[in-house]
Image (cartoon, rainbow, N blue to C red):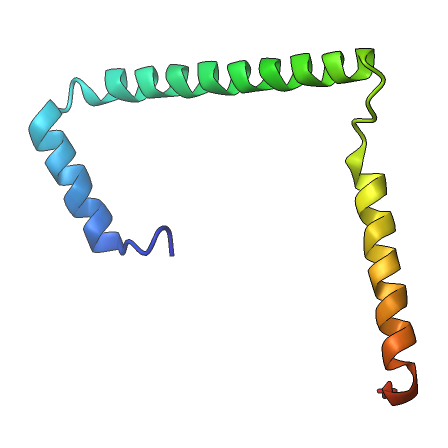
Amino acid sequence: MFLFISGAEIVFILFIVVMVFGADKIPEIARGLGKGMRQLKDATNEIKYEIQKSAEKQGIDTDITKEINEEINKVKDEIDDFTGPIKRKF
């Protein structure tokens, strides 16, 4: 199920798009949307790269997954300590 839209609704929407824009304009519109999405993706990747580059230049650790895993392990250990006597084995 894609965005809670059924097949009939998708066909109806496509029919309205063809009626409004015409069959000859649809590939042009799709091409323009594709180019726009590509430019947006490239821009966000460039911004991410620049942020990461400046963070590394300032000596900031950009690998946050290690810290997150450490915190998760701490919480797991605390839960195991708390539930130790009542833990069931399955």
